[in-house]
Amino acid sequence: MSLPKRLAGVKRLFLDTAPIIYFVQQDQRYLNILRIVFERVDKGLLLAVTSPVTLAECLVMPYRQGRLALAQCFTDLILYDKNTTFVPIIEETALKAADLRSRYNLVLADAFQVATSVLSGCDAFLTNDKDLKRVTEVNVILLDD
Image 1: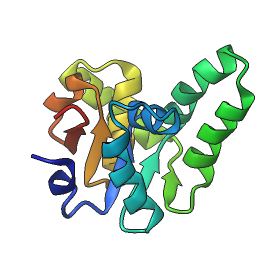
Image 2 (image 1 turned 180 degrees about the vertical axis):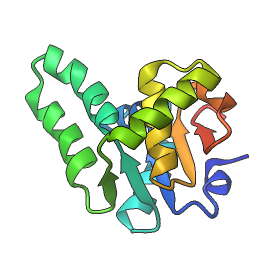
Image 3 (image 1 turned 60 degrees about the vertical axis):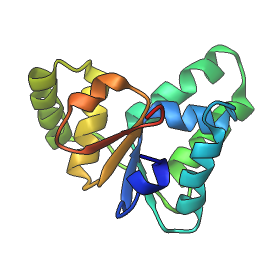
């Protein structure tokens, strides 16, 4: 099923780290697909949701490489985009992440991402992590599907 069809009815979309990195760095394998998503976000048709995990993971390589302008691009998109909600990690998120990690054997960062998406009422979770397809609490959409 195409991405536009998978997004039908989705109002709140959690953006995992990989789609943001692919979009900001203009990864040609996924750029056309991600343009659809980010155009919908820009038009206010879709509310993007992100977390501190997303921000931290996106900033590792730019910091490591001393590419501060790239780090700022990630920061602006994740924290300050008008149709993006940055959801902090709180106690309830940690509890949900522990539950998800125990049931699905997720790595901790993924458990926090999924917990954040579930608790913030996301209709879908955009990722390229096949391991997350086993999660049933949220509609997981893989870029490679």
